[in-house]
Image 1: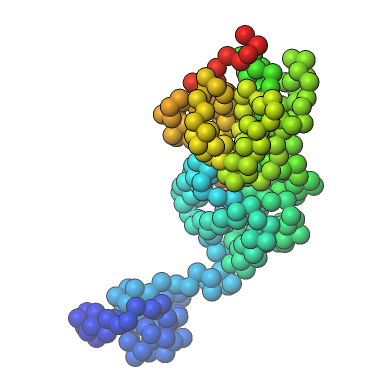
Image 2 (image 1 turned 30 degrees about the horizontal axis):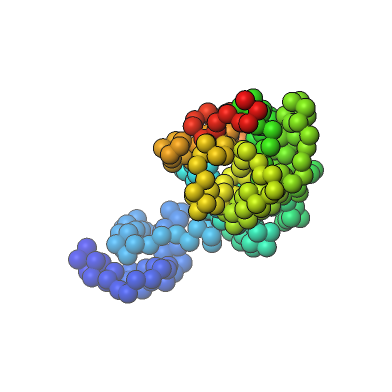
Length: 352
C-alpha cells in the first residue's frame, strides 16, 4: 500500500483508533498489529514498517489505561484541590504539573469543592485509573479510601491539612505562627476589637489559625470575645454572612482578620456594598495572597503561605517516594513558614 493510499484510508469520522481499525487498513490480523506496535520482533520487518506508518497516519494512540493493567505503570498522578478560585491553589497546580511533566508524568486534576462525597468519588476514580501517586488537600472524611492507595504501595502527599494517624507525608503551613503574627500586628496598631474568620474546627488549619489568634490576644492582655470569632466553610458565602454578623454587632470590631482565604472574597463584597472605607473605618488583614491584592485600592495586607515552596516540596516528596519506595516508612509532617506582608489596608486602632 502506498503512502497516498494509507492517507486516503485513514480519512474517516473522528473516533478512537483501535488495533482492529489498523488491522483492517493493513489487511492483517489484530494480533499482528499488536506485535508490530509492541516491537517484539515477531513480525516481518517490512510488514512492521507498513503497520507503523498506517498507525501514525491514522493518529493511533495506545490505550493508556489498558496498558497500565499490564505494566502497572500508568504514568498518571492525581492532584485533588478544593477549588481554583484560590490563587494559591492555582499556583500549586501549575508548579506540580510542571515538575511532574519534567519527570515524565501526566496530571489528573480533580476539584472537590471541599465536599467529602465528591472527594470519595474522585478517589475511587483515581484508584481505578491506577495512578502512581496522589497529592491532595483532604476533607478529613475518607481515610479508608486513602488507605487503599497506601496499602497498595501508591505514595500519597497531603497538603495544608493533616488527618490524625495519616500514613503519608503532610505538608502544612505554620498556621499558628502565621495567625499569631497577623493578630499581633493588628494589636500593635492599637486594635483590641479584632474579628476573625477561620475554617471549620475539624480542620487543623482552622484550629491552628484560631490558636495563633488567641495566643496573641492573651499575650497583649486582651480578653477573648466569642462574638468576634466566626468559624465556617472555605467559601465566599460564609465570608459574606460572617462579615455582616460582625459589622452588625452593637460594638463591632475595628479590625477584621479574614484567616479563611476563600471567605475573604465575601468579606470584601460586604465592605464594598456598605461603602466602608479601608483602613479609615475598618482595618482588613487577609490570609494567603492574591495577585490583585497588591494593586487593590488600598492594597491588602496579608499573611502569605508561599504556595510555590509548598508545591515544589510536595512534588519532590512524591517523586522521592515513587523512585525509592523502600526508603520511607510512615508519614512525616513538614511545615512551611508564613510571612506577614504589610501594605495599606490596616491603620491605627482606637488604642492610639
